[in-house]
Length: 332
Picture (cartoon, rainbow, N blue to C red):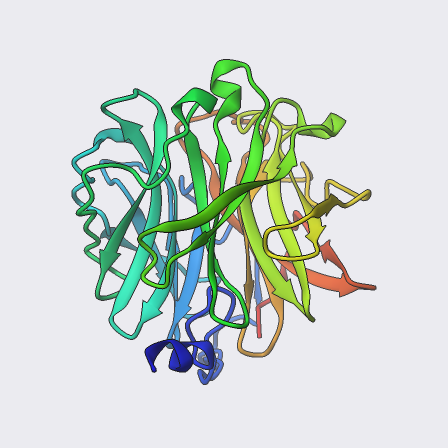
């Protein structure tokens, strides 16, 4: 009964069904200018619950998983650490790329990357909370995914298909040991805690612009088609960029888009990447991503700031209108 309710309710990462768009407050500008959060906030993973957007980021300022909230995707406020204690299998200091999915009215799963004390590699864990602001807790004595022989596992991203089936996507950290990197997909159990079936390789770093890395996967369903957004190249270089592939099913096969990359370095933003596509109540699609200031690539401060740009669709292809560093219309 719960699963049937979720399939028709506002529990997907791309939109919150049944919610209404928040009006622009009187006197507030109808435009905004990037970045929307002018401080370090790498690897954003985003959901909407009710009228509020929640963004989860890579560790920083003493927080394992820092949280930002926003009513409109433009105005963001820090809200502390949603994962104050890591799972017993993990050591602090390398908690990366968290993403959250809502499984029931009072059940949220957070997938995060951390350093395994047993293998010394980055691995993926899952933590549960009753609310999107946490606190999340990982009760497992071991990570959910840990491909130590492939360099480790990072950048986990959950996806719920139209029929309610759950999937998880991630990257093996092959570049850490000089090996090929792949984007993987696998089915998840309904409770979000167990992987089922076999992992499937969906994409590898084979294109010239990929460099040694493909990472940060996010699967999106639009008009009955599946799109696998991802980032590639060195995260601390201007060559870092965003591309996508089209997939026949949630587990492939996937075909890389010939027009890639679709978001790359531009005025005001260097090495844009680790993107997350969201859909507003009005049906608009927008891309949240991090980027370096061009004169401070690889910096600790300000680090990778949070950017937002519109995505249009032309003949079934996503067109990112960015990076945009001049005023643009706010999301509807």
